[in-house]
Length: 426
Image (tube, rainbow, N blue to C red; front, side, top):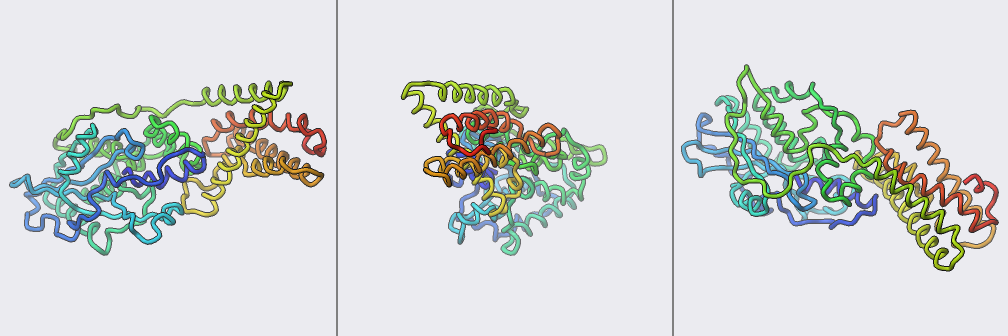
């Protein structure tokens, strides 16, 4: 699942000014040149000799491995060396307009079948746990699964439009397994929920990489804050493994046995999402107090430090807000659309910053206009937060940035007493 997560991580990191590589090696995938998908899936083996399993790979240490990975395994019981894994997490860097489509949220992935043993060895060498849940499927269910996998890896259907929450390498595995058991997986998980959201699951898994987690938290909009069913949670490979492990049909567990292929040798993600509220409050208060003290300082060093801090904060807020606006209006990254963090990190901060370098009445009016717009946005954001009118978890960023921007607005008149009265309210 790692490569799909890049489609979310990069835009969010751009919006939050976090730093990460824009592309990574295609680990968690079968080799790009693998042509096994064009071959039948053990076509000469009868259905009653096929053993099917869900292969789940635990998260790794690198940021693009944080969400884990999975695949469906088919094996000949009579000749266990004959094994294939169907992997839905393949993409092609050489595809036309790959980077442009990546940035616009129009990614296409592929499903391929191949021998998974080399990849399993790589996961084991990296310290990532690998297990297979071997499924107790009737021959008719195996036949349905093989038919679905053959279709999904065929030239006509292997390419699919990717979405990191609703249509990724794990949800495609889920859908294939559900087809095999005639919808039993959906019926057992679609009406149950733990109340978790896409945001919470994402932050839980990304948490060890703080810049990545903060970028995700900033870049995700209210779309990701609705409670998920267990069926929807299966966008995470381990959650799909949990759902399959709980599945019973006619009182019989679908998982016959679980085989550990490689032990987990690196720390696993937390079982709960991070609780950062007080950290955001304290950092926001500390920054606001520091700015207030610096602007009151009479030394050249204090004035220079305040100017640097002011410029950095306004630049970061303005760039981040512009990134969010671009994600909303210029891309198909629906998880970032209508992001209320735009009210907190307004693109008007760039106008505030750049107009402040000017001289004369027009420059002063532009600064006043920018400050008025930023303050209005903050008032709207506070109203949303207090009335629960917004279905987005953006309070962390409001508590972090609102005190800082309010102090900057209030001190702007001190450093520029010729500003129009419209800015004095700051």
